[in-house]
Every structure is written in structure tokens, then in C-alpha cells.
Image (cartoon, rainbow, N blue to C red):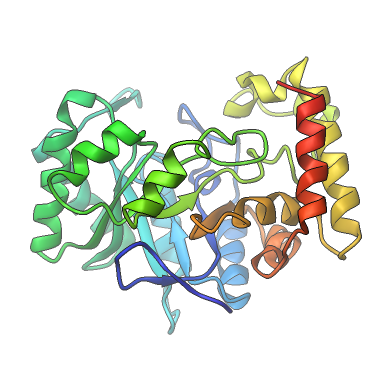
Length: 319
């Protein structure tokens, strides 16, 4: 499978990587409802068999559980993928999550992630959110020290805007940025993508299928049946009046994909990968079948006319 260099690092990554957010399971603030660990392991194995060579997780996903599941999936795997994880979201005894960017916290979080992942070095360690903003420099210097100590190979950030990126870049290079990006969330196009291109920052986009809305398999009935602890229930894209527009967009993606023998989800991911600034897409998968349904996005290319169809739909149906 094609690989692309992530920013200025030596990491050569495939266009698709495993997103392990939902693998954290439920019983925390941003869970996706119940998740079977065996299904998660099977999904990771299926992705590796399909040629994907990186996994993106975070300490906060399931309050450590996602990292543990990833480690379980990789037991005995000869050709191990790159492991990407994150710091700066911590939780207390009541499982309440908050942002923290203090040096000692970042260092302790890294040690905890190393233990859960059962590795000596993390390939890419990322600040999850720039919160609180006044501590960005302190956290970034902590990541630089972790790199110098060999605890991490490369350092990146998530959810940073251009001013945040510039503050970090003034201290040390930023290898990658992980922002949300999809047809329904194109906000990074005007400023963030051009800045990343100009400063050689790799871009790993997350939620390219908008948390399942653009898979072509989401319905009003599925939304209504989501468990109470599925964070998506409370999000505007899953509620009216936006839900009707979003399901209609998914129908358009089904039609475009059908011309190529591809799924709506693959079409949504291909739309993201059409941008040369985007190095890779993080694809959340919960079972092996979902991997099979999106794997073709790695080589799928939309025509200019098809991109135009999608734009025309969005222009005619603004949020």
C-alpha cells in the first residue's frame, strides 16, 4: 500500500489508520456506548491484514481502556504498526475528565501510556487539546524533553488552531496536527491546511465520516436507539433539523460510491484524502466488517465532477 511521510518525521504511514476512540467502551463522558473488546481486537487485526500501518488512540479513551485493548491486539504481532497516542486530558476518582498541560502531568501521563501500551517508546505523542491555553508552551517543552529522553519518537498536536501552532513551533518543530475534517466539518480548509503545508506539518484528520453519519448505514432509527451513554446522541449533527440534511448527504455519497463499487464511507474518506495537505485519515472501526467496508478508500479517487456534486449539495443545503 502507498505510504506518505508524516511531516518532517521518518514515519511513513498508510493513508488509513485505525481510530481506537470507540474501543475505549462506555462509562466515561465521551464514550460510544458498549463495545466488545474481542470485536475491537478483531478490527485491529483486520486493519493490519488490509495493510494499515498505524493506530491512533489516547489515554482518555475509556480512561485507559483503549490503550490496553490496543496492547492486547498487538500481542504476538510480528510486524507491529506505529502507535500514536495522546496526553493532556486527565480524569479524577469520579471519572471526571479535564484538560491539563502542566509538565509533571504530561510526563506522568506518558509513563502511564507506555505501561498500558506495553512499549518502551511511543511513535507519535500528541497534545490532545490546547487546554488550558496558557500552558501550551509548558506542555510542548515537556514533549520535547520526552523526545530527548527516548520516551517518544515524535511529537504532534491535536485540535490546535494556527495561533496555537505558531506558539508551539516557536519552541520546537510540530511534526503533525490532528484536526476534525469531513464534508460536514470543512473548517480547516481556509487557514489551517495552508499553514500546515507551508510549515511542513503532517495532517492526520479524524472523524472523516462524521462519527458514523456518512457511512450510509446510519438511520433515524439507529440514532433513536443509541444508548444513553453514546455521546453522539446530544450532538447537533445527529439531531433535527441537521439530521435530515446529513442523511440526504449520505444518500448522495452512496450514489457516487456505487459508480465505483465503493461505499458511502469510502467516498467520505476519499473526499478528505483528496487534499494534498492531508497525510492520512483516522478511521474509527469497531469490528472487522467495518474495516472491509472502508478499506478501499486508500486508493479511491473522486473526480472533479464528483467533488463538484458534493459541493453543490452542501451549497444548496447549508447547515
